[in-house]
Length: 370
Image 1 (cartoon, rainbow, N blue to C red):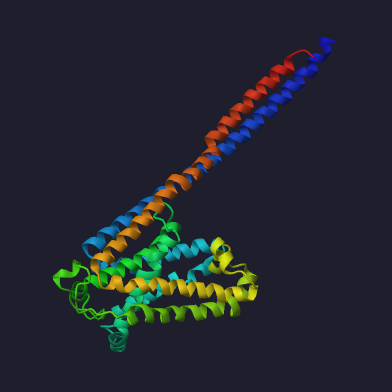
Image 2 (image 1 turned 60 degrees about the vertical axis):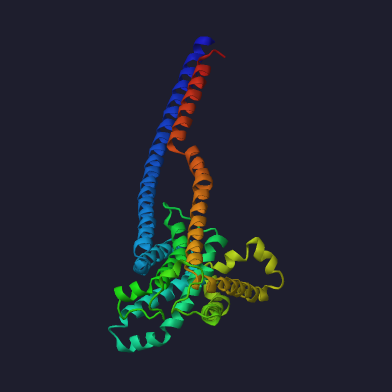
C-alpha cells in the first residue's frame, strides 16, 4: 500500500512545486512593478520638493532684498501654480473651487499689475489708473492682508515643499499679502524702479517708518480700508451666488462638479450654522462668508499705519504656515509613509519569502507517509 501511494504523493509534490513557483514569479513581477512605481513617485517628489524649496527660499530673499519688486514674482509664479492646481482639480471635478473669493482676489491683483504696467504705454489706461489706482490699491491691500492672510491660520495652510497642490493653497493666501506689503512700505523705490506704472497714492516715507503709527503721506481712512473692500467682496459674492446656487446649479450637478460650498457645509461648524430648511442654506452660507471677510477687514487699518505691526503680522503668519507644514511632515506624511512602507515591494518580497517557506513546509508534510 505504501508503494502504490508514492506516485500520488510525487504528483502532488510536483503540482505544489509548480504552484509555488508560479506564485513566487507573479509576486516577484508584482513587487518589481511596485518598486518601479514607487521609485517614480519618489523621483517626482524629490523634484517637486527641490522646486518648492527653491521657490520659497527665492521669494523670501526677494521679499527681503527688493520687497518693492516682489509683485513681479507673484505675477509670474502664482499663475503657474494656479494652472497646475487647475490641472489637479479637474481630475477630481473640483475646478470650480478656483472661483472662490481667495482665488478671485488673486485674479484681480494680477489684472491690477497688468493695467499698471500697461498704463505708461496706453493713455486711456494711465488716466483710468490715475483716478482709481489709489482706491483700488487700498481695496486690494485690505483683501490680501485681511481675509486672505488670516485664512492661513483659519484653514491651516501649510508650507509643504514636495506637494505643489498644498503649496499652491498656501501661496494663494500668502504671496499677494507679501506683494502689497512691499508696495505699501517702499513706495519711493517702487516709483523709481517702475516709473509711471503704479499710482498707489504714496510717494515717500519718513525714516521713522519702523515706529508704531509713524506719520507719512500715504493716507488710508477706515472707509478706504474697511468699507470699500466690502463692496469689492460683494462684487464677487453676487455673481458667485447667482451662478453656484441658481443659474449654474443644474449644470454643476449634471457634470458632477464640486464647489467649496459643498465641502464647507459638511464641516462641524457649518452643520450647526446651516441648520434648517435646505433652501435657506446658501443664503446662510454666504452671510457667514461675508461676515467673516468683513470682520477680517477690521485689522487692516492697524496694518496700514504701522510697519512694525504689519511686518510682525506677516512673519507670524509665515511661522504658522511652517508650523502646519512641520505637523504635516511628522504626523500626516509620516503615517502615509508608514502605510506605504507596509505595502512596499520590500514587504511584498518578505511576504513572498514567507509563502515559499510555507510551501516548503507543505511539501515536507506531503512527503510524510499518511
